[in-house]
Image (spheres, rainbow, N blue to C red):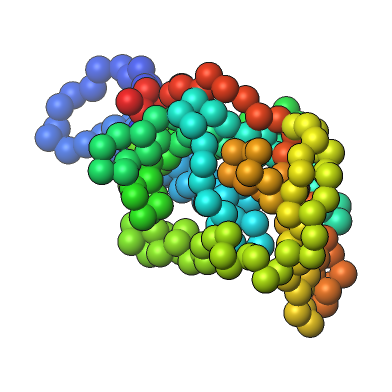
Length: 238
């Protein structure tokens, strides 16, 4: 984990064997800077898991992956909570033996943009996260603790057999990424209502979703706005 070290120029002083006041001050500043850098990294990791939930999990469900190497999608997400729309970009970078895969995840809102690369295994467990430290500019590599891995895995995989009973019909749907023939899926209870539009013609399957909290009268909506190719690592992950 990178640290910010502040250099301070000092006048020579007599060596008494004890750290002088300026030396103590330097060490305190270095310690504070290291703590600040560590806090920044932790904030970046928290952001990653939030963005991951917005791009991989749609209403608590994860849909089958069918991305090709170098292929990615861009989503625009809106909510009724007053927040500005934001974009989530996700791409499959490279696969390795034993099911290991490097993925890309970028969050963009206005002028703010944060890029992550993460490694998953055959069970979709996140084992590494790489990102640029906003303070030092250095590439950081973070290995999630077991509790964080478990939180990220608290997702129900939604297969074609699972969603078949909830298909209300087929629709021709136009989104930013193009026009798709999609299955419309609806699942609801007294508290929430989730809709998905699923098409085999789109990487990841989902082309649009709408989630409504019926108790709070709020809504979140995501739409596939682009399908891109040619992605590779920008953080030296492989």
